[in-house]
Amino acid sequence: MFDVFKNRLEITGTLTTVTALRISQGRSLEPIGSDLPVVKDALGKPLIPGSSFKGAMRSRLEAFLRGIHPDLAQDPSELVSKEMNERVKEMKEKHSDDDNALTAALDSMTDEVSKIFGTPWQASKFQVRDLTIKPETWFGQYQERDGVSINRDTETAEDGRLYDFQVVPAGVKFDFQAIFENAEDKEILNSETGDMKSIGYWELGLIMLGMQQFKMQQIPLGGGCSRGLGVVQLAIDQLIWIDPEGDRSSLLDYLGRLSRGDLSYYRRAEEASIEALGEEWSEALVTYLSWAVRQRIQTGAGV
Image 1 (cartoon, helix red, strand yellow):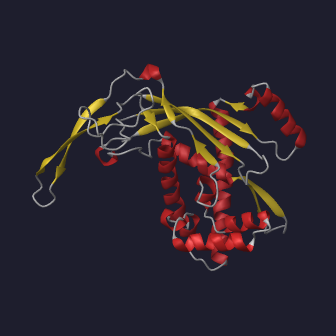
Image 2 (cartoon, rainbow, N blue to C red):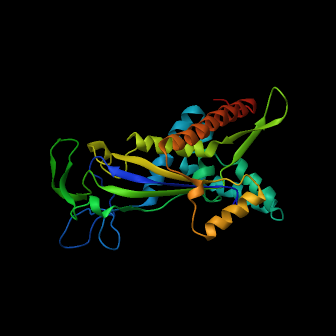
Protein backbone atom coordinates (compact mmCIF):
# COMPACT_ATOMS: atom_id res chain seq x y z
CA MET A 1 0.00 0.00 0.00
CA PHE A 2 2.82 2.37 0.85
CA ASP A 3 5.69 0.80 -1.11
CA VAL A 4 5.24 3.41 -3.86
CA PHE A 5 4.45 7.09 -3.34
CA LYS A 6 1.25 8.01 -5.21
CA ASN A 7 -0.22 11.15 -3.65
CA ARG A 8 -0.48 13.08 -0.41
CA LEU A 9 -3.08 15.38 1.09
CA GLU A 10 -2.29 17.65 4.04
CA ILE A 11 -5.19 19.34 5.82
CA THR A 12 -4.67 22.17 8.29
CA GLY A 13 -7.29 24.11 10.16
CA THR A 14 -8.66 25.27 13.49
CA LEU A 15 -10.95 23.38 15.86
CA THR A 16 -12.98 25.57 18.23
CA THR A 17 -14.85 24.43 21.33
CA VAL A 18 -18.43 25.67 20.95
CA THR A 19 -19.38 24.28 24.37
CA ALA A 20 -17.13 23.05 27.17
CA LEU A 21 -15.03 20.00 26.30
CA ARG A 22 -14.14 17.04 28.51
CA ILE A 23 -11.70 14.42 27.26
CA SER A 24 -10.78 12.67 30.50
CA GLN A 25 -7.45 11.05 31.29
CA GLY A 26 -9.06 8.88 33.96
CA ARG A 27 -9.60 9.26 37.67
CA SER A 28 -6.92 11.31 39.38
CA LEU A 29 -4.79 9.81 42.17
CA GLU A 30 -3.74 13.22 43.48
CA PRO A 31 -4.93 14.09 47.01
CA ILE A 32 -5.87 17.61 45.87
CA GLY A 33 -7.44 18.49 42.57
CA SER A 34 -10.23 17.40 40.28
CA ASP A 35 -11.53 13.83 40.50
CA LEU A 36 -11.59 13.61 36.70
CA PRO A 37 -8.97 15.85 35.07
CA VAL A 38 -8.81 16.42 31.32
CA VAL A 39 -5.99 15.30 29.04
CA LYS A 40 -3.07 17.76 29.12
CA ASP A 41 0.31 18.13 27.44
CA ALA A 42 3.65 18.16 29.28
CA LEU A 43 3.17 21.85 30.15
CA GLY A 44 -0.29 21.34 31.62
CA LYS A 45 -2.13 22.84 28.66
CA PRO A 46 -5.29 21.28 27.15
CA LEU A 47 -4.71 18.66 24.48
CA ILE A 48 -7.06 16.79 22.17
CA PRO A 49 -5.56 13.40 21.22
CA GLY A 50 -5.60 12.79 17.49
CA SER A 51 -7.03 9.35 18.22
CA SER A 52 -10.11 10.95 19.84
CA PHE A 53 -10.82 13.06 16.76
CA LYS A 54 -10.15 10.18 14.39
CA GLY A 55 -12.26 7.73 16.40
CA ALA A 56 -15.28 10.04 16.54
CA MET A 57 -15.03 10.68 12.80
CA ARG A 58 -14.67 6.99 11.99
CA SER A 59 -17.72 6.11 14.07
CA ARG A 60 -19.88 8.66 12.26
CA LEU A 61 -18.72 7.57 8.79
CA GLU A 62 -19.31 3.91 9.68
CA ALA A 63 -22.89 4.76 10.61
CA PHE A 64 -23.44 6.49 7.27
CA LEU A 65 -22.03 3.62 5.22
CA ARG A 66 -23.90 0.93 7.17
CA GLY A 67 -27.07 2.83 6.29
CA ILE A 68 -26.22 2.29 2.63
CA HIS A 69 -25.08 -1.34 2.98
CA PRO A 70 -23.95 -3.18 6.14
CA ASP A 71 -20.90 -4.69 4.39
CA LEU A 72 -19.43 -1.24 3.72
CA ALA A 73 -18.48 -0.85 7.39
CA GLN A 74 -17.83 -3.85 9.63
CA ASP A 75 -18.46 -3.85 13.33
CA PRO A 76 -15.10 -3.00 14.99
CA SER A 77 -15.41 -6.07 17.23
CA GLU A 78 -15.38 -8.29 14.13
CA LEU A 79 -11.99 -6.90 13.09
CA VAL A 80 -10.34 -8.40 16.16
CA SER A 81 -12.44 -11.56 16.40
CA LYS A 82 -10.91 -15.05 16.50
CA GLU A 83 -12.55 -15.88 13.18
CA MET A 84 -11.03 -12.85 11.46
CA ASN A 85 -7.60 -13.60 12.93
CA GLU A 86 -7.80 -17.11 11.51
CA ARG A 87 -8.74 -15.78 8.06
CA VAL A 88 -5.80 -13.39 8.07
CA LYS A 89 -3.48 -16.20 9.16
CA GLU A 90 -4.74 -18.40 6.32
CA MET A 91 -4.18 -15.61 3.80
CA LYS A 92 -0.61 -15.08 4.99
CA GLU A 93 0.18 -18.79 4.75
CA LYS A 94 -1.43 -19.11 1.32
CA HIS A 95 0.40 -16.12 -0.17
CA SER A 96 3.61 -16.29 1.84
CA ASP A 97 5.75 -16.02 -1.31
CA ASP A 98 3.71 -13.37 -3.16
CA ASP A 99 3.35 -10.04 -1.38
CA ASN A 100 1.15 -8.52 -4.10
CA ALA A 101 -1.28 -11.42 -3.95
CA LEU A 102 -1.37 -11.19 -0.15
CA THR A 103 -2.10 -7.45 -0.30
CA ALA A 104 -4.93 -8.02 -2.77
CA ALA A 105 -6.39 -10.85 -0.67
CA LEU A 106 -6.35 -8.81 2.54
CA ASP A 107 -7.81 -5.82 0.74
CA SER A 108 -10.70 -7.94 -0.53
CA MET A 109 -11.71 -8.83 3.04
CA THR A 110 -11.45 -5.24 4.30
CA ASP A 111 -14.50 -2.98 4.42
CA GLU A 112 -14.47 0.51 2.93
CA VAL A 113 -14.06 2.44 6.19
CA SER A 114 -11.26 0.17 7.40
CA LYS A 115 -9.39 0.66 4.12
CA ILE A 116 -8.98 4.26 5.20
CA PHE A 117 -8.79 4.11 9.01
CA GLY A 118 -6.86 0.85 9.29
CA THR A 119 -7.23 -2.66 10.69
CA PRO A 120 -4.96 -5.04 12.65
CA TRP A 121 -3.67 -6.29 9.27
CA GLN A 122 -3.69 -3.04 7.27
CA ALA A 123 -2.13 0.31 8.11
CA SER A 124 -4.24 3.46 8.16
CA LYS A 125 -3.96 5.93 5.29
CA PHE A 126 -5.32 8.73 7.48
CA GLN A 127 -3.28 10.33 10.24
CA VAL A 128 -4.47 12.97 12.69
CA ARG A 129 -1.91 14.72 14.87
CA ASP A 130 -2.66 15.61 18.48
CA LEU A 131 -4.48 18.94 18.51
CA THR A 132 -2.49 21.52 20.47
CA ILE A 133 -3.99 24.68 21.88
CA LYS A 134 -3.62 28.15 20.40
CA PRO A 135 -2.21 29.89 23.52
CA GLU A 136 -3.82 33.25 22.79
CA THR A 137 -7.31 31.69 23.05
CA TRP A 138 -6.86 30.14 26.52
CA PHE A 139 -6.73 32.15 29.74
CA GLY A 140 -4.72 29.49 31.58
CA GLN A 141 -7.45 27.95 33.72
CA TYR A 142 -9.92 25.08 33.57
CA GLN A 143 -13.53 25.04 34.69
CA GLU A 144 -14.58 22.70 37.47
CA ARG A 145 -18.04 21.14 37.40
CA ASP A 146 -19.86 18.90 39.86
CA GLY A 147 -21.57 15.61 39.15
CA VAL A 148 -23.46 13.03 41.17
CA SER A 149 -24.55 9.44 40.61
CA ILE A 150 -28.34 8.96 40.66
CA ASN A 151 -30.02 5.84 42.01
CA ARG A 152 -32.27 4.59 39.21
CA ASP A 153 -34.81 3.11 41.63
CA THR A 154 -35.23 6.00 44.08
CA GLU A 155 -34.29 8.71 41.56
CA THR A 156 -32.25 10.37 44.28
CA ALA A 157 -28.54 11.04 44.69
CA GLU A 158 -26.41 8.12 45.84
CA ASP A 159 -24.68 8.68 49.19
CA GLY A 160 -20.98 9.40 48.83
CA ARG A 161 -21.15 9.54 45.02
CA LEU A 162 -20.59 13.27 44.51
CA TYR A 163 -17.64 14.02 42.23
CA ASP A 164 -16.18 16.89 40.24
CA PHE A 165 -14.61 17.00 36.81
CA GLN A 166 -12.59 19.39 34.70
CA VAL A 167 -13.63 20.85 31.37
CA VAL A 168 -11.93 23.01 28.79
CA PRO A 169 -14.05 26.16 28.42
CA ALA A 170 -15.95 27.16 25.29
CA GLY A 171 -14.22 29.42 22.79
CA VAL A 172 -10.80 27.75 23.02
CA LYS A 173 -9.10 27.04 19.68
CA PHE A 174 -6.83 24.14 18.73
CA ASP A 175 -4.49 23.66 15.76
CA PHE A 176 -5.66 20.84 13.51
CA GLN A 177 -3.49 18.90 11.07
CA ALA A 178 -4.23 15.66 9.24
CA ILE A 179 -2.47 13.74 6.47
CA PHE A 180 -3.81 11.26 3.93
CA GLU A 181 -1.40 9.28 1.76
CA ASN A 182 -1.92 7.12 -1.32
CA ALA A 183 -5.59 7.72 -1.97
CA GLU A 184 -7.01 5.19 -4.42
CA ASP A 185 -7.98 6.38 -7.91
CA LYS A 186 -10.58 3.68 -8.43
CA GLU A 187 -11.27 2.26 -11.88
CA ILE A 188 -14.59 0.56 -12.65
CA LEU A 189 -16.10 -1.01 -15.74
CA ASN A 190 -17.99 1.34 -18.02
CA SER A 191 -21.16 -0.60 -18.85
CA GLU A 192 -21.70 1.41 -22.05
CA THR A 193 -18.27 1.01 -23.65
CA GLY A 194 -16.97 -2.07 -21.85
CA ASP A 195 -13.77 -0.19 -20.95
CA MET A 196 -12.36 0.64 -17.54
CA LYS A 197 -12.87 4.23 -16.40
CA SER A 198 -11.48 6.22 -13.50
CA ILE A 199 -13.98 7.61 -11.00
CA GLY A 200 -11.48 9.61 -8.93
CA TYR A 201 -10.39 9.66 -5.30
CA TRP A 202 -13.46 8.33 -3.48
CA GLU A 203 -11.54 7.88 -0.21
CA LEU A 204 -10.84 11.60 -0.06
CA GLY A 205 -14.54 12.19 -0.61
CA LEU A 206 -15.27 10.18 2.53
CA ILE A 207 -12.67 12.16 4.50
CA MET A 208 -14.12 15.48 3.33
CA LEU A 209 -17.58 14.25 4.35
CA GLY A 210 -16.27 13.70 7.87
CA MET A 211 -14.63 17.14 7.87
CA GLN A 212 -17.91 18.68 6.78
CA GLN A 213 -19.66 17.01 9.72
CA PHE A 214 -17.19 18.64 12.12
CA LYS A 215 -17.65 21.95 10.30
CA MET A 216 -21.41 21.71 10.87
CA GLN A 217 -20.97 20.79 14.58
CA GLN A 218 -22.50 17.35 13.96
CA ILE A 219 -19.80 15.23 15.66
CA PRO A 220 -19.22 15.82 19.39
CA LEU A 221 -15.95 14.98 21.10
CA GLY A 222 -15.15 13.54 24.52
CA GLY A 223 -17.44 12.70 27.39
CA GLY A 224 -20.61 14.30 28.66
CA CYS A 225 -22.06 14.77 25.18
CA SER A 226 -25.57 13.92 26.38
CA ARG A 227 -25.41 16.84 28.81
CA GLY A 228 -24.28 19.29 26.12
CA LEU A 229 -20.51 19.02 26.35
CA GLY A 230 -18.14 18.37 23.46
CA VAL A 231 -19.68 20.46 20.68
CA VAL A 232 -16.82 21.57 18.43
CA GLN A 233 -16.48 23.26 15.05
CA LEU A 234 -13.74 22.72 12.48
CA ALA A 235 -12.62 25.34 9.97
CA ILE A 236 -10.27 24.17 7.22
CA ASP A 237 -7.64 26.82 6.53
CA GLN A 238 -5.77 25.15 3.68
CA LEU A 239 -5.10 21.95 1.75
CA ILE A 240 -1.78 20.87 0.29
CA TRP A 241 -2.53 18.37 -2.47
CA ILE A 242 0.36 16.57 -4.18
CA ASP A 243 -0.69 14.25 -7.00
CA PRO A 244 2.06 13.32 -9.51
CA GLU A 245 -0.42 10.87 -11.12
CA GLY A 246 2.38 8.41 -11.81
CA ASP A 247 4.36 10.96 -13.81
CA ARG A 248 8.09 10.73 -13.08
CA SER A 249 8.86 14.37 -13.93
CA SER A 250 6.03 15.61 -11.67
CA LEU A 251 7.34 13.53 -8.79
CA LEU A 252 10.89 14.82 -9.34
CA ASP A 253 9.53 18.37 -9.34
CA TYR A 254 7.77 17.69 -6.03
CA LEU A 255 10.94 16.26 -4.50
CA GLY A 256 12.84 19.36 -5.58
CA ARG A 257 10.29 21.67 -3.98
CA LEU A 258 10.22 19.47 -0.88
CA SER A 259 14.00 19.66 -0.51
CA ARG A 260 13.76 23.46 -0.60
CA GLY A 261 10.97 23.42 1.98
CA ASP A 262 8.57 25.31 -0.28
CA LEU A 263 5.25 23.59 -1.07
CA SER A 264 3.34 26.77 -1.87
CA TYR A 265 2.82 25.50 -5.43
CA TYR A 266 0.51 22.77 -4.07
CA ARG A 267 -1.30 24.93 -1.51
CA ARG A 268 -5.04 25.56 -1.76
CA ALA A 269 -6.01 28.26 0.73
CA GLU A 270 -8.92 29.97 -1.05
CA GLU A 271 -12.34 28.78 0.08
CA ALA A 272 -13.54 28.34 -3.51
CA SER A 273 -10.54 26.18 -4.40
CA ILE A 274 -10.97 24.00 -1.30
CA GLU A 275 -14.69 23.57 -2.01
CA ALA A 276 -13.99 22.67 -5.66
CA LEU A 277 -11.68 19.84 -4.63
CA GLY A 278 -14.17 18.69 -2.01
CA GLU A 279 -16.98 18.57 -4.58
CA GLU A 280 -14.81 16.61 -7.02
CA TRP A 281 -13.93 14.02 -4.40
CA SER A 282 -17.52 13.87 -3.11
CA GLU A 283 -18.78 13.03 -6.60
CA ALA A 284 -16.20 10.24 -6.77
CA LEU A 285 -17.45 8.93 -3.40
CA VAL A 286 -21.10 8.79 -4.52
CA THR A 287 -20.11 7.07 -7.78
CA TYR A 288 -17.98 4.52 -5.93
CA LEU A 289 -20.59 3.70 -3.28
CA SER A 290 -23.26 3.21 -5.95
CA TRP A 291 -20.93 0.83 -7.78
CA ALA A 292 -19.94 -1.00 -4.57
CA VAL A 293 -23.58 -1.64 -3.63
CA ARG A 294 -24.34 -2.97 -7.12
CA GLN A 295 -21.39 -5.33 -6.82
CA ARG A 296 -22.65 -6.68 -3.52
CA ILE A 297 -26.15 -7.17 -4.88
CA GLN A 298 -24.80 -9.05 -7.89
CA THR A 299 -22.78 -11.38 -5.64
CA GLY A 300 -25.84 -12.10 -3.53
CA ALA A 301 -24.92 -10.06 -0.46
CA GLY A 302 -28.24 -8.20 -0.54
CA VAL A 303 -29.00 -4.84 1.01
